[in-house]
Length: 131
Image 1 (cartoon, one colour):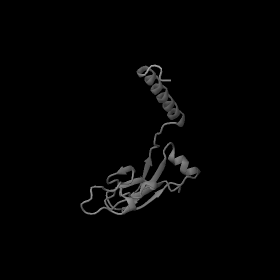
Image 2: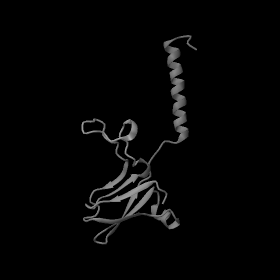
Image 3: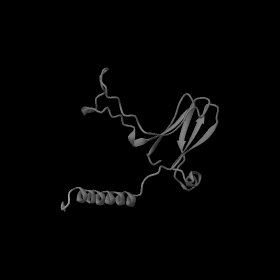
């Protein structure tokens, strides 16, 4: 619903979740043209967050994310997203994407400040009277 993720089902029964904004292929060249047959720069692959090989034993026919409504949030629990997949044999499976971990902004700022202080102290030690 939010456009953050893209769910994929394959003919082999595998299920994947990608980050939607990283799907644009970047060829690493000016102009965005694909490389020639001898070019050493391969495309940058989209970031895959979740993958289950052969989650279903047969072709996946439909995938849908659980909506971010009240009942959907209850089903999600502490997970970032939930994807329902359906195969030809009418079996439905729920795939839960764990919440990604990140550093809090305050911790990042504290680490930067500590790095600046450590750099100044090292410069004072290496070059007395520098400041």
